[in-house]
Image (cartoon, rainbow over all chains, first blue to last red; front, top):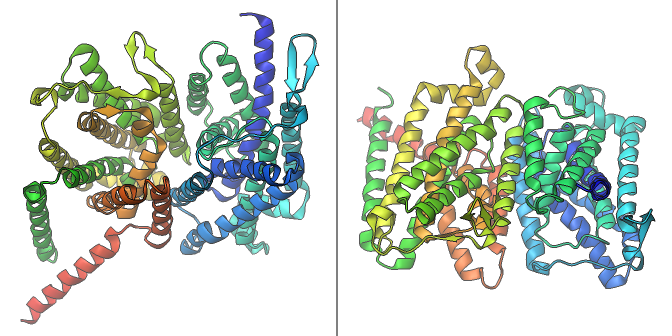
Length: 296
Length: 337
């Protein structure tokens, strides 16, 4: 195989992978803290893409400015779904151990509703927006070019991950979240309002998708049905990187992005997903804690 | 002693239900309504097969649609390309699906946590996407997203093809009876007790010497086998399969929904769920589907959320309590007299 083409595929894979990693952060954070698999994860991303799309269509607001609206909106949506739907499960279980299946099915129900209400409102069409500089690209040499919107998405994804990690380590709220993840009873004894931390964590996990949605919409058209594909990709990313590990997400995303991008040079892009699944199974067999995970 | 009247009630109810179900085609001659009954029994069968692994072990599979897809595709491809009767093809597909089920379950069951649920979703989605985009493999036509049509052979019982819906009704009724019998037997067998122990606390069960991986895998193999048989039935009944309908996640969620709303981990629960939700779904689709496509899925989502929040053990729980109270009441009357 031509090394130049391979090089281009790897670079594209890295760019894509950074984005996959950022998409998966919320899933990993929510699972790490609450042990809940948010099945509606992809649907939240879908909404995170629709918000900047409509702000652009109706008011001409630049999607990078729309972050200011999309991130808080997604935070509120996630906060509300946790507070209204999932919190009763915790109240029912005295030991505060939620049967993971119940929470997964609850979020699956929420995802079905989000997908299909959007479908009824906007129809099945793919909708995208065109920015002036979306067609421009950064040229490295004569052959390699990286589209500016994708490059921006990649860099902001990395920055976002670093920011979130810093937030979890340095701030009081971050410390409260991490202590709740380690031992919720001990955290409660130290005066942490565990239920509020859960709401905030769920909101934060979704807010990330609001930011990512604004970064993606310039080059990724949205339709109500895209949620599932991204949800599945996020599950794979999170298991690859190690459930609950935030740097692991980026690593898992990069592996997934490079595998998909390089495999697409040999087979069709859709068949390439078979390879990511094979890697997923191999990791489950030989390193079930993921690449950067602690023990399960 | 104390369970005697209860058992008598149960046998009576079961006999009454069996007579009712066998007699339905005598009263229902309209093809559409008969179809609704076939669909209901089919979903009851599929949800019961799902229940064997998910209801009894607590390991949630959202990839059962892929197993049903394997069944449907294997029997149909064997019929098209080798002229093999689907009666044999469905067994081949079911054995294949059981092997796949074990292969997917094996790495996951050794681990604690949500690995099984995530892996089944990823597996089913990737199989669906791959099938949708594969026109041909090793010279065998898969026809991608278009799906496969089962070639029409007229009235050919040996090829699993009949005139009218009536034979299909009795076939799926027999299949449902079989899967319920298997579940009933399993619940009372050593395996059933082991599975319940694993569900309650896997570590404790293992400490008592239960080889949890082995029992989880056998449950998965049985469940996969039965699910694939259902997939072949679907292909022969509708004479058309495609990846979206037969391998899609919506179908898996539907099965899980029926099992959970009815009451997972019981013989009757999934059947109850299917008998409630399938006709309701068919009705919404038939009346509102044209005006609001997607509305019936929104309703499924709402039912799922409400069920999880207010009836976590399924509809079977209040129903059983009601019947149990009646049985107790009649017993105390007997003693009083």
